[in-house]
Amino acid sequence: MFPNSLQKSKKFVIFIMALFACASSLASIAILPPKENDLTSMALDIKAAPPSNIDIISKPILFDKERIKLTRQYRLEHYGIKSKSIVIQPRIIVLHWTGSKNLDSPYNTFYPATLKGRPELTKGGALNVSAHFLVDRDGTIYQLMPTNWMARHTIGLNNIAIGIENVGGVDNQEDLTQAQVDANARLVRYLKMKYPKIKYLIGHYEYGKFRHTHWWQEKDYNYFTVKTDPGEKFMRLVRGALSSQ
Ligand SMILES: [Zn+2]
Image (cartoon, rainbow, N blue to C red):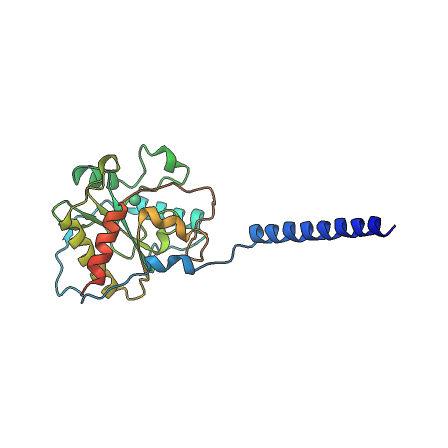
C-alpha cells in the first residue's frame, strides 16, 4: 500500500510541477513587458562638442498634398494615430545605406509621393519610402524633408525616428567611406543639439531590438523585414567618433 501511494503522490507532484511549468511558459508568452535593458548599447553617447557649423544642402523631395495625405493614412493604419498633423517628436536616429553607387538613384526613388516596385512593402500602404537626409560618398549632406515630419524608412519606429541614408552598400558590401563616418557623426551631434530628447542612435539592422519595447508602434506584428544596413563596421566607427573627445 505505502509504496503504491508514494508512487501516486510522486505522480501527483510531477503533474503539479508540469502544470506550473506550463503555466509559467504560457505566462511568458502572454505577457511581454516593455524592456529597456537590451537597448543600452544603442543609447546615444556623445562626448564631443556640438559642431559650431554644419553644411547641409537642401534637396527637397516631393511633399505635396497627396504625400501628406498618405503619411497621415500610414500613421493611422500602422500606429493608430489619428491626426491632421504629420509632425513627429524625434527620439531615435536610424542610419541606413542606399544599396546604390550614386546619389541620383535613391533620390529619384524617394522623390514621388507613392511607392513604386517594392512588393515587400506595398502591403504596408502606398506612401513612398524616404529619409530626412541623404549623405553622398564624399560626405556632402543633403536634406530631403523637414526633420520633424514623418518619413517612411524604419518599420515600427517611423513616428519617432529621423532617417539618414548613406550612398553605398551595393550587394551588402560594407563600403561606406570615412567622409560619411565624419558627416554622420557631425549630423548626429547637430540633431542631438536640435532635439535634446533624442535617446538612441541605431543602424537599421538593429531596429528589431525595439520590437518588444514601448518604443515600437507597429500594429501588425508580422510586418517586419530583416535588414543589414548600414553594416556593423560603420556603426562602430560612427559611435567611436561620437564618444571620443
Ligand atoms: Zn535601411
